[in-house]
Image (cartoon, rainbow, N blue to C red; front, side):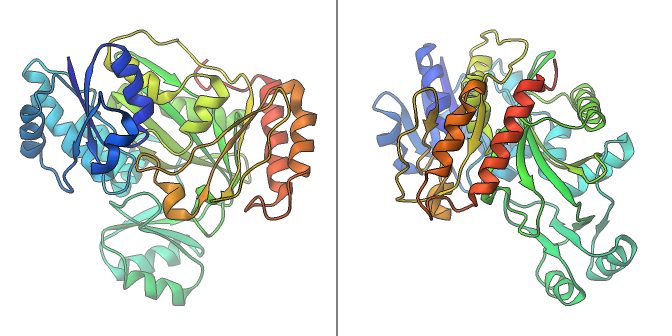
Length: 406
């Protein structure tokens, strides 16, 4: 069986279980992948743009029996609707392609579609308005009140979002953005993420991760992140209900992820829906021992998955400048490094890496002592932020709040 992986995002963790399961694997992405994936994995260039017909021609030319969408690297986010359309025809030829259907693909790739759909179905989202021109943006701001977020309908992660504090900044943003846009209330509170994998009639959810307090930078990748993280009971119930409705109404097929906030009143606010695994997959893996990328591979191979996963340890994702070497951790702790590569490009682009510290519940004191002993400048965030996130993860682990869909 020839499996063609469409995208290089953490492909090493996807390819290994595919290859060990007997698949002949081809990875499409950056041309420099061959030296990273080994001689038994064929690599080729993924085009910068794709159409439904172009995708089908590409897969046919490669002799694909199964095609695996694997977005995550920059420039590939908007391939999701293309893969959704191509999958219908590819599967009609007796091939396999675990791709999200067109309706879900539009939810996950267009922020204006997500907002309108959420309002129609009663999913909790921040107050917002879809705008097609600058005048409508100004009217929306008068209605919602500053500060607001202005989001381009279709944009890659970490771009096309603007935190607007005042009228002067609003004018510069409306001169810059590509319309249509979503003008949305800037929620005050904490941001979270949860990764899911849906196949057939089952959905597997990894523990909720906290990605820190919301701020004007709109960049959760610069905060200390922790998993698991407990939610207020009301927000947890709202999240579970939203997930169940998404699965029932839009039938995702493959990995997906929800970014959401809990505001100062403890209410859930869905921020974004992604049709792929995300930056928190390292924490999902190290917290539970079940790698979401490897689980995706098992789905592709038709192998069974557990009914649920639970956190076995707290994991804290630290921010460390590239080139800084962390000291060894005490016995009982686990430190996993994720260096920058073409399959994990963020450290190369941003100039810092995000090692994950794994802490079993009874090793909390050793973890705090290790953090306090780090030389000044080792972390890009404050020691207090790291220690605080560690403590909240420990509270969630002790409370048993580690599984969304238990």
